[in-house]
Amino acid sequence: MRILSGIQPSGALHLGNYFGMMRPAIELQERGDAFYFIADYHSLTSLSDPDVLRRNTRDVALDFLACGLDPARTVFFKQSAVPEVTELTWLLSTVTPMGLLERCHSYKDKTARGLAATHGLFSYPVLMAADILIYDSNLVPVGRDQKQHVEVTRDVAVKFNLAYGETFVIPEPEIREEVATVPGLDGQKMSKSYGNTIEIFAEEKAVRKKIMGIVMDSRTPQEPKPDADRNLAVQLLKLVAPADTARDYEERLRAGGLGYGDLKKKLFEAYWEHFAAARARRAELVAAPDYVDGVLRDGAAKARDLASTVLRRARRACGLD
Ligand code: AQP
Image (tube, rainbow, N blue to C red):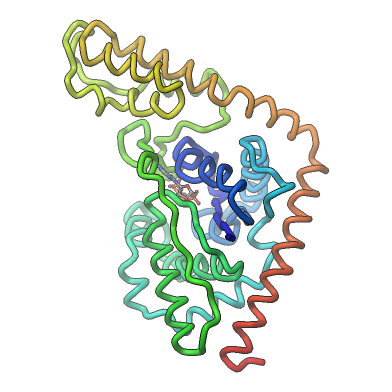
């Protein structure tokens, strides 16, 4: 089974990225042949500073490796190190109905939030289809926000196969219900562009301030809170704390007697502890830039090998060769 997933270097990675995609992807390394990439072509739809793109790309590599991506098992590479994917994007775009792209939420959401309405942003799902299909991927671990794009990929692959004969594997999304949409500091989906994130690796003081600043309602600590399961800090605590700790805090909040300040303090402590080992590993990786470069270089060579084979198959199928 081949597993494929990507992450944009469009800003610092956060708990939504980690629990929605990185952790499931890291666990899936054990179950198959994993290909994970840093989606730098994609991030050009929202980033226009070359230095920032270079720095973010490096940071994503460090973050993913620190969190447990194992380059001995997984092919890890920069999307743009495999330019074959852009050629496949063109082939796929010729069978992609406009209506399919027009129905995608992401374009509407992002332009509504002020991103430039470019062709790249509009056709992003076709590049994503190429990302997935060019590695004959079977499984794509993603957060719920990407489900529609994996469905577009499936539709495009079926269209191409119908037009030119069996060429592409039809992939399945893998979405974990319990972390399908991790909420941000304001309760909306945690997202780099909403400014509501808790980064995986940020300065202690800055994250503490963010967590302690989560706005709660004005009920007194003594008041029982029957809606404790909907409390944002409880929801986040369930992700980062041991299950019995999270359950205990939820029960104490429900019963009354636990103040929001103490709950947020616990959330910060659990968050800090959850990523302690990864933080130490990241510091080691920062000091080993040649190692990180080597991982990405080796990954790109392996990815390119497979991508060229699949691209050749597609070129032959549609008559270019
Ligand atoms: N809040 C979230 N809950 C669950 N999964 C999430 N993902 C992102 N946010 C959440 C998943 O992370 C993977 C990589 O995402 P991405 O950075 O490539 O793009 P994104 O989904 O657009 O992430 P952001 O933070 O929301 O970035 P911006 O603001 O730049 O658009 C994907 O699998 C995604 O589902």
